[in-house]
Image (cartoon, rainbow, N blue to C red; front, top):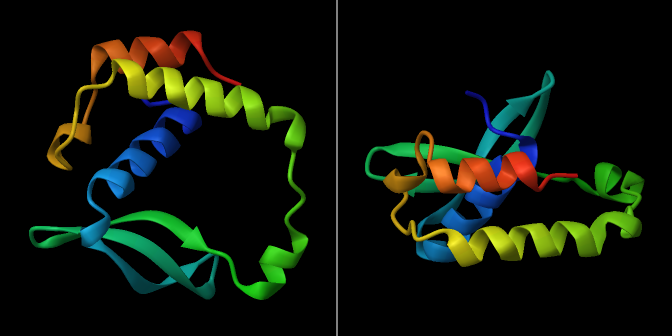
Length: 106
């Protein structure tokens, strides 16, 4: 079962919050262009969690403020029921969080 985008974002955000000492940056290719990815280094692997925006892309971002509060409420609700901490625990499915995001998405 694939996870909704907001759930994947939530899980990457939780990993970053819980393990900020393991954050690093990696040069990557994204869409045929050179880019930088924010990653979590865990054991012998790097997990990309975000593509960092260059100035050109950052200048093109248009915030959708009408969704901001809804997204924050959904993420907070997930955090309240989620008892995972380790990086490995976010791999795969987790029924109570999976069900939460199936019922709470934008």
